Image 1: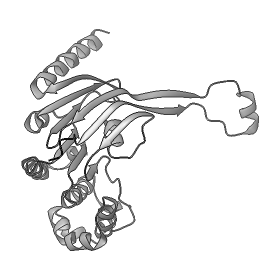
Image 2: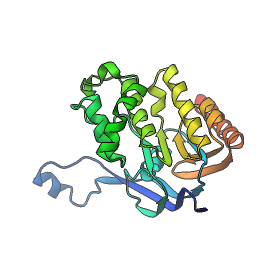
Image 3: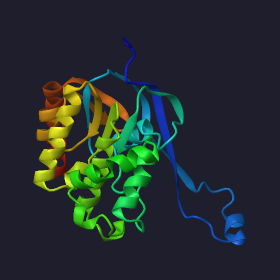
Image 4: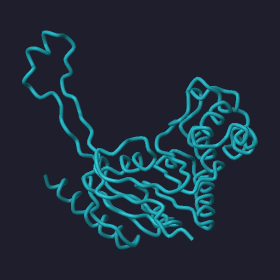
Length: 253
């Protein structure tokens, strides 16, 4: 039996370069030649952690802390600036609403496109087409272009495709928050099925109740680094204490 972790990160760093006051003319470029027109933003700065096979890991932290960047690196949306990213297994990622979809294609066409992007053969996707559409509760909209879908409909379609690609590793970044309550319960039921079958799940969430219900381990990312990593209640307690202190300090400012 393979004892290697499903995910291994070693000293992972990701830098984004933000440009300020872009120049549009040669004259402006010459006048500002010696002025720095960009800023380096280190979204992640030295993250090291392993995620075991079959583990459900929640990633928490304030907005801008680097959580979504971490999932983007795991889903190969981004390349690391430095460090190691090792992902062992088939991955399905729900990282951004509508990612992998095309607004001018129909729901059915987008299922075929997204399924192939996630590694299925076209014949396999076509064989699952009706169940995917049905699971997403979009039978009456399968021939409508994606641009006419609501955010919740797009989320349902993306989650349904991810489920039917039968991944070994599922990455979820907040997108479930846009679904209605009934479909969220349906998603949680599917996540539990994944857990029972030994799949690995990494999800980003601000919903503390969902984290408590689903995750066996929590990583708290703060300003691009791991602030805490451990059992769910322990890390949540530290995070909530910190958030309360920050809110009190901001109220006094």
